[in-house]
Amino acid sequence: MRVKICGLHPARDVQLCIDLGVDFLGFIFYAKSPRNVDLEEIKKLKKFSKLNSKFVAVTVNPSDEFIKSVVLGNFDYIQLHGSETKERVNEIKSTGLKIIKAIKIRDEKDIDSYKEYVNADIILFDTPGMEKSIEFPKNLISKLPKGERYALAGSISQSNIENIKKLGITFCDLSSNLETDAEIGYKDHQKIKKFINKVNEIKD
Image (cartoon, rainbow, N blue to C red; front, side, top):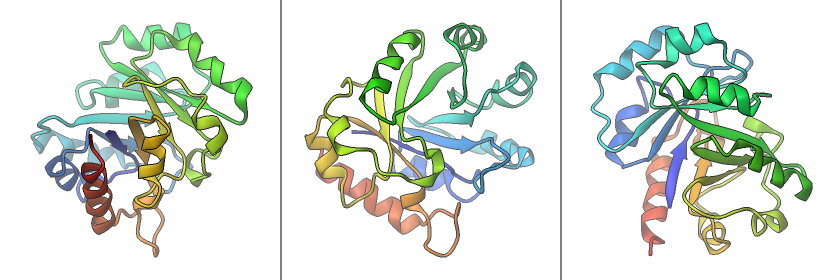
């Protein structure tokens, strides 16, 4: 099971996630989000030895200037949550970045839209709520394509990851369920440790 944890803080959370072997560390660049990263904090990412972890810039319709000044040189992947076309994905990919394209799933007919993005390195199936932790409909999980290129987000937690794995999911993305109850956007390190321990327990 590959794991991506999103909404991380560059100073507080990175070393823990690297030490735990989290595959993808996501940092949000979206002004409306309580998890939005201060651009000054990005400089701190340079000091970490990433080992096998990858850094992901999570964006919505990013401009060329933003990609050039913030993403390139600091991140391995860029996650696209906006209305980016396959042509735009190609433009961004030509910079050398790897692409995670998020597909919002409301009902079964939305699933096939992933086929438009054959040029994306990873497809992330997400709920329309984005950061609002809406649970992904169980009846649709079984209809998603399976494999290492496909990730699932949507109210995943320590309590349901085993059942999600049984449905064939091998790559999960989570954020709010790993936060403290007191503050949105503030990661709870004990919850992260418990989740990764659970993932390691259920590995084949």
